[in-house]
Length: 80
Length: 254
Image (cartoon, rainbow over all chains, first blue to last red; front, side, top):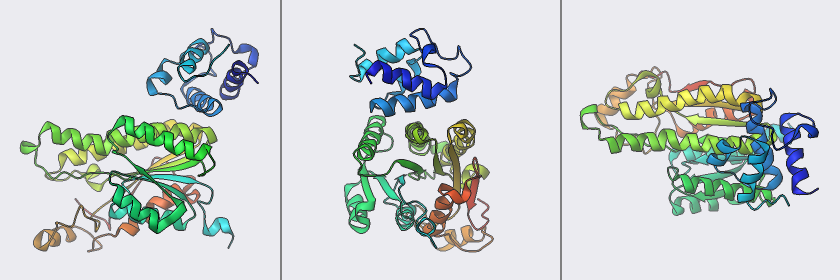
């Protein structure tokens, strides 16, 4: 599984949504499944699957799938 | 009795701050006896080395200042690396035990002293809960126990900064119990009264007598009695308890 697939899998696991719904445009608090509790689970899932420890500022900024990709690149996770 | 009865913390890690004090040492000892792997935090290496030689592989020392934000993050990185490398079980518990107690009337309490109380007794535990809860939420289970104070609930003459810092932590305890329940994490506190530790060793003669007269049980508590209460709240025996502050004070009126 490449990093993009791993990222999508993390979102589907944490938010309980279909993989098809995980697009760059998907944004925090715009769907019922991505609330503050799910956000915490999502962060834990991303940290777990990519073996990173995110800074709090990055967690605050992680407001969309596109943002998540940008932030993870700071932690040497590339998306091709 | 099964192994899980005698060692309820088998295959779990617990991070304890302030392990070189009286209550900290009792916490480490009680948790190790219960089968836990303990990550013990303190500022001084010598105290940590003594604990490591006493408790062996079940004790993992972490030397840092709890008020140093970067050092706290680095400590959590070290902890998680040991978990990832299979050297320790996943983090299940956190005990925010490190604290300082300032006895200082309002008129002579400098802003620096007030900030130090808030930094050690409230901001540091808050950051620890933030980082620990992220590791615990991976497994959807965890238990956090904060060591607060009876003075935080009732007020204490000449100790307003200390009492305020502990009251802040108590408020965070109850709020985070609500916030973290959906991810399987319980948050509780113990509120020790007058306990025989280095923090209270200067109470002698009349001063000690006056304090003991305000305790229904007419004696000081022991670090072990506090540790037993903390370990109960950490354990599955209190699985249906969260947002609770458990006094361990012999019914003390500060």
